[in-house]
Image (cartoon, rainbow, N blue to C red; front, side):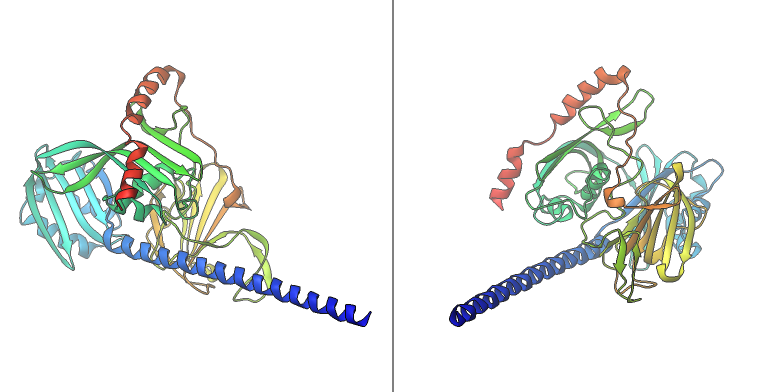
Length: 420
């Protein structure tokens, strides 16, 4: 009896040790995965900071010179003076016309990188920045626009997949914007996902590199067996938007994420979470994204800036009010790029991720309120926009068939993967 008892005790001890070893192995694997995701996010943020120029395009309003217009875009007076001083050397700025197109290109930290003013149908004034110096030139605009089909497979993130397909980061941003209401490109992409896109490419001069993308006419993203397709359709009123082939609008009141690309969710919405600094349990009424300092933060919906500044433990914070009693809050920011009272558009960069306030490291604490009550944004169902009108259905189906037919064959993805 004693021998059997000792044998049983030994077996239980071995079983317990095995279970403990398995738990440690699982924890080690999880830590490694989070570390890899954090490093990937850091690399993406650095590439985003150094390579991407985000353009805002608008027409010069009546009665506003270029200087006043640029100051109204949030640029500081010293930068505007330097840029326009360079421009004045090659073009008389007194000849700037209301109604002409002006593109303002900024780095993700908000610094002015380029200006492009369409003088007329065949000439363009371009101002560019190298280090702290601005240079300007007026050039003719011989160009050709071609339709291009691009396809690729995700190995880690959409950003890298698009650049691996030989395209620039702007195309990844365009895809994230198109599908951003249904997919969170920080958490949803998985290895083996694929994308296809039909996009206009504008080439300047004879054989020069493509300098800008035009419209994305159709796109497809396959995510773990789910297929998302988008077609650009212009209604008789002239309003253009993206729709699924069944006529439902892709646009919703809010984007699926306050960040454009992949980063791990480090803390979920919870009624009881142990605070790492305060050392006691309390509700965590938001979602934490473990993104590196400097990662761009976007407004998930059109709205008005209710507050922008320091807010106690939340650090630097932006608080937006949206239609229908909705509010969004973006906390622990390193830099704020909007001001109270300003109108912002869905997808607009409003701040950069940081670690201000009660934060153990760089991350975005994102919070969502509906009529004063905090809601779990990860589980929130977003209301859709209006579908294609019945009166436009025949024209829409024709556009849909034509545009989806421009997508490259799925075999193009396989061919590229084999070549690599």
